[in-house]
Length: 348
Image (cartoon, rainbow, N blue to C red):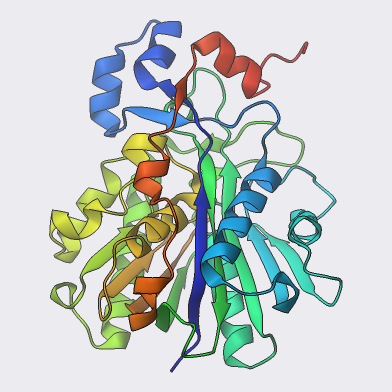
């Protein structure tokens, strides 16, 4: 058996803001924007939350489902585009918080919204090479969006953590194979010292998102000798509620196969966490033998794809509270409170 996921956890902040509330502040048609994006509301980190705290919560939940000693984790990789420090690793903070000890490989990764899946690939490779007992891969973000910009309507907060190991009796989802597709496509960027990202508007759909997601998914399925009909679930990067649905349709996936992992309409685009929290939600319900396709996307640009198979162990290693239930614990804020919590008022 290939290495696979032995434990998982996801965390989404409880605070929410409706897209209609954001639109009201800018005198725009909120209902039209919400419908056009396929997103109702988004999760926002509180003033005392960041990528590190989100990652710690997700990692602790992953340890609960994995049922392993944190001292057995030999590698931690955290993918994000909102690390709290420009020079100071998030991964070392996580290691200290979950008590891994110091015999550890650790690094922070950045590749826009696919940095989390890049971390998963690294942990898979290290486990396959038998260089680690367990690797911890995290994708988390407190996504940035300039006030008044189109990104502000979807940029959310959240993340997920996956512990990867190679013991067959512990694996809940075997990673059968992985594939990546990468080009130099500058659809979204943030220069050094710039506080908010810039983007190419409609250019972010074609030739950015769709070229990479579709190419990566098709090449992954061809490599694995599979078709859309062979999968029980599929998770695609979800910058909004419309793109992944269109991608799924073009690839031949039924809407029901993507429904469980489609969280952006409820929590917004969690950037590096988007496809990761989608996979966590799928693992909450997957049955032994179920086949899962995951395809991430990161601007700049690239996609990672995975084929996974749920094992018999998944029935006894679930999250205590399913993610779809956990995200119903929420507290709505108005636009003023949103600005305070996301530190967008610079005099504070």
